[in-house]
Amino acid sequence: MPMEDIITSYLVQKKECSLPHLGSFKVIRHLPEIDPAANQIAAPVDEIIFSQPADNISGGLVQYMSSLESTSYADAEEKIILWCLNKKISLDRKAKIVLEPFGSLSADESGHIVFNRKKATCFYENLTASEITRLDAEHYELAKEKAPSGEADRPSGETPVKQKAGGKIIAIIVAAIALAILIYYFTRHPFTLQGISNHSTFEVKPLVPTYQLSK
Image (cartoon, rainbow, N blue to C red; front, side):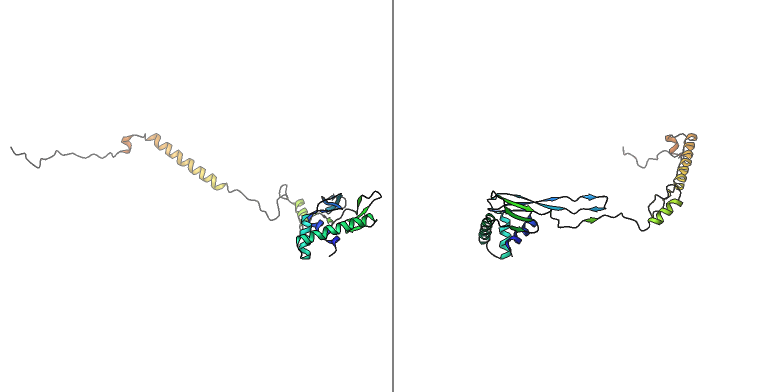
């Protein structure tokens, strides 16, 4: 697998990559944009920011290459550094390093490395937003015209709930009658201890001695 493909694959996944002698890449993601006129939501776009120089190497890139080529970390690191050094020499000789689909690296007249970025890279498709229409929308509008005020706003399938107030009214009337009867009774019969005691009387006979004391 070419080194350029390894670098771009790692950059897409990790959003950053540092290459010694060349520079550092960083991915900035732009949020989706809404276009009401076209009923579309633009997909997020990735923009590559390049800065130089880079003296270090991304440890994640070394591990990534080591895994891809089934080699040791030290061997992968040495291979990347050697590749970057050779590419720096090539850039000084007016060559280019192509990193698809992001752009390419080249050297200007003063020897500085320049990243020639392509148009912001989009890995997703635009989303078309269409108005959601209920299947029964036509029937709903027709019912809304014919129904009395307030009935058409009720969701489909929902039936009005009638409160059963008749049973509550009857219970209140019965309770009021019972209370009136109790008040009338206690008004005519005052509450006393004698009133709740037993009115029957019993004859009490004198006690008859059952024993005699010896003298």
